[in-house]
Length: 328
Image 1: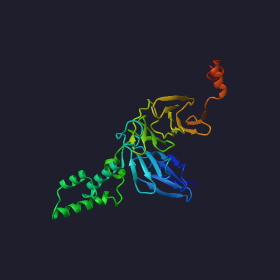
Image 2: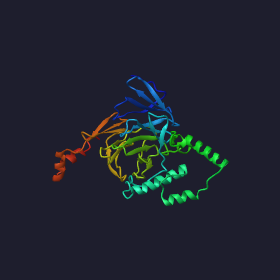
Image 3: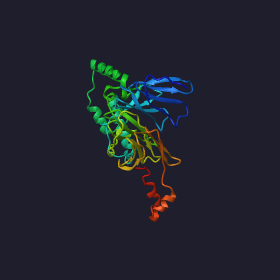
Image 4: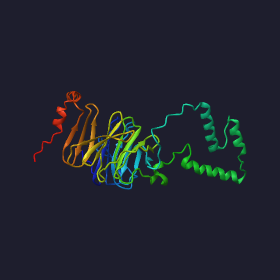
């Protein structure tokens, strides 16, 4: 099948968990993301919101309907393809330190009821069965009369049109305050979700790697060690099955970073030109890397034979592998 795109294609992505659709998301120099349907051979619809080309795409690993896009405008947007407009835009200034906080076990049903009553009081002005503290709060409020009551009802009615509990609220990504948010100071060149779908990794042309909490949309402030990334090409990141390591193409090398601490775990050197993509096989525990030198290298763990030789202290296999076979 052929799908005619309006410009240079940066990235394509297909959901690995989808069972009800066969859509391929395509990002190009155009500001719109196009969804290509293999079943019908046509575009289903487009996603509009970015102000520049879309360089990176990633389907959610927990929902087949959620698509994450990264644009040259520095924005990362979350889309539910069943609805119009994006529902989240990540902001690098909105952060939380460390891992996702656990649920408070000390919160009792009584506290939850009081919180619910307070929320209801602020929205509707009156509740039934509230505690004495809530009653005192309600009694202190001045009850408007006459024209003031009519104005108050008209004001509440106008509020319900946009953010009422019955009418669907506007997507945060479409409001002016969130629409300008950026995740990187340059283009978003790579996206990768963890296997459990709780976190999202992003790389940018600002040579930064960031870890995001998907549930809250906050930057976890993990300080990854210094790296140099390609600023003009889309990069394909790879994450281990337990989400402990992330593999990032850094110019002619590939670096493995610890996701929690941001420390460099290992650096892979073997390519002669810029590395563009990484792919990790969870079955064989092998890493595949592709570069501009038109080579695909396979990185695998050390075999038991080599490990035994190294444990014996001989180091025969290791020394032969490190020798330079190039002639003068």
